[in-house]
Image (cartoon, rainbow, N blue to C red; front, side):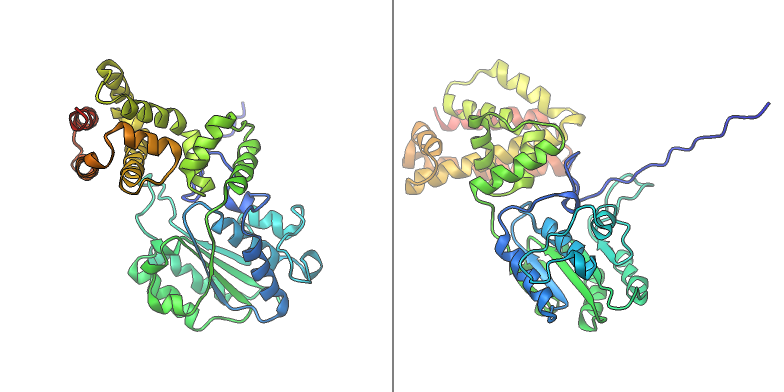
Length: 372
């Protein structure tokens, strides 16, 4: 009797730059808000005088990596597939280059990033020198005549010192028809020698309309609807021009959490401690680490906006109303002290693995005391 074949499950490593089930930047169909930056790259490439290294700089989650992969698809496409006039990086999604880049199987593309360790079940804290050493064999291989090679570093901020120095060697002596695209949110962290060898392209935060379009595209791709108009407006304001942050908040229940935080502050000095205990219970378990972080992120951001509104009288309407509700300029010093204390105690709780529920209850107690 024949034995049934043994089926082995192959574990697929997660990607550091993928947000939940949403499309990866290389899979994103349309790039919103960066038409001028795209045109600059396309025109430079079409001119035949393409600089070998570009620093794509800007806040997190605004589309820098999406632009990098769009550039890669265009550079790796055949001449008849790309825009020869240099007005766009768009190519047919069904083209060989587009499909191979989406699958990360194109021989002319190398992405340097933090790689998941299947043994340790975690991502390293930085991009290692071993990861950058993959450049050696990649750059040593030549494709067909006039074929380009593209190296994407996402993000360059995460290069450790040895990795940065190893990358610098390739930037100093770039092979012909090789394009380096370095994605960065903190260009000041990079070696000055790396920055000096790159042409910088600064990308700005998305406007409200652009963010709305980008968020709708991402949500629709996973079969989800945009929140109602009021909820969408709140998320757009909280996202501050970052589609990644919008999607993180939407997927992580950030809207409900923010509304709970705002309601808590708006009700001070009165506190429903039963509700606070219930909220603290949902945020303090081991499985609630992401929501715990999000709670304090949203709380500290809201307090900072309220303090600013109390100090200069400017800000969103609800922030100004909350600043007046919490006592106005005369309470400014007390609110600032609470912000500083909460930020410090939260950092200590995480670093020392202290009780999270205790921290949440103590935080609410501080806010209550400040407003009595």
